[in-house]
Image (cartoon, rainbow over all chains, first blue to last red):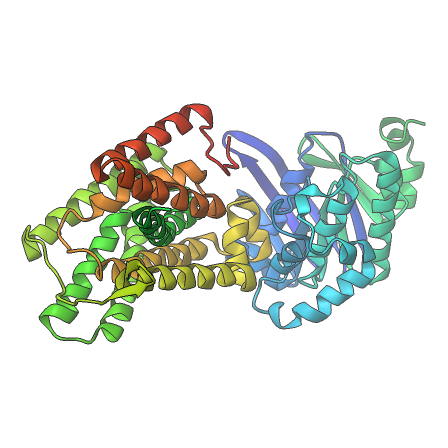
Length: 234
Length: 286
């Protein structure tokens, strides 16, 4: 479904990613883990079109995304839940969800998808008229995920959904991600919380200083001595 | 209460409607594109000349001339964005101020070239409405009503439609719009057309009350800008309220002193506000 090859990206004179190769098959959940500053967010931004790659290819369902204008990538079926949620703080929950259905293909389905997102996250229905910036961190994350789901993506990119949340809320967010998986979405998730994310994905890539150092099934990585020492603290 | 004071208050409210309309247009553009169109009131002048030319020179009926003028100024708005703002969008704000400031002088000179410096009147005399002891100009009542309707229409557009929601959202997070499937440059163009359209609507209402001349923009431009800053640049609600505060100072202040002094009072309040609350009444940007 998604194939990244030889990807290089960065900001100004800084090269954040080099020679990244990664694939995601339909129906899979794949994680990219690694320390702060490894380039995880840059990778997500390069896939969703927020950042133009300097070299290499991002191919989604056979189309090279370099040929697609950034604002049309969401129509192709990639939705991105960005780092720090990035809700529109002074719009209501429902207006935020509406923005998620902005693309022409999604608009006719707005009402039914809104209903679907509300059934997934009943809390959002309660808060529908509330201004998004006044909600708690966990609720905002819920809204950000709901906003991405409004385009009914084939591939959902999630950037650090657990960041900045209290531990008990982090558990709830991982439950949300689990439910998204059960709904049949293909997920590519970036996380610092390696222990928990390896519990819910099929495979993972380990990104360190801009390159992929290791990859494998979640089970294999969990038992890898180097990973256990560096990321799981065992 | 003194009937003349009541009249001053009523006239202040009526003036407030049209100032609010102008402030809304300027605020909309600032909120979305982050640029202040210094020449905004000169676009109004262009619209007034368009109506004068259509109606007084060529005899096109007003109900047809006014919509044409609105579309004309909306197109001017798009051109201002395409030709002047868009190429320098990424440069320092001062450059955008200078460029739209240059446009102000260009439009003034161009209007002088076409129509001369004379005061032009469309030659339409609307009646005075008598309510009890109160005399109110019908042109002002009409302008107030239509301005309110125009603002209501814009509010519904911003609230109900996808593009309208995107216009409100883009001011809150520019970068992320692409992830929503929004092409920011298209939103900028639509906003410029809307801002121009509002200036066009204002021109149709002002031409009923004022003579048009190349420098008419100076009667409204500075006060509109002050209202926007007073309300908090980019805050549409703030601009709306500030418009009525300013118009009352001008109208009631003018009743107690003189019309010239009332503008001095308005500017004084503005200067004091800049020191006391520089972000404006409803400012969101620090």
